[in-house]
Figure 1 (tube, one colour):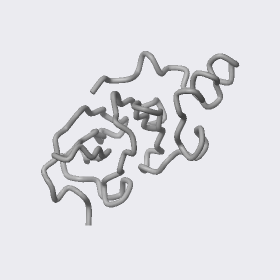
Figure 2: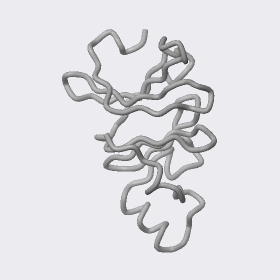
Figure 3: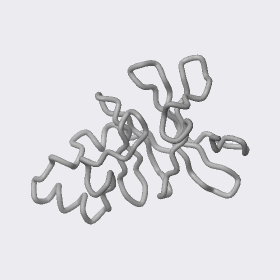
Length: 124
């Protein structure tokens, strides 16, 4: 069962190359989730867990990279695969904390720090 049985408010969204839409949503209690919809507006249950991914940080922005990987910017930077799973090739289990992110830019280690970050984040 997906977690959209409760009222959710869209915070921001981005369109994927497939025409699907990923949206950051929050419920009345403030819990944030990433949700993906098919082009016809129905929930895409192949994404994450039944169409929904819990976000463990308070988000301030959302971006979709050219390869449809999803970035969520907040207290940390999270990256998800197009299937809605943490991208294990990014940071630690798909998450970079701010000190890690800053250190990677300072040392020039941009292999795991997204080069297009400032230009591609849609504010919440």
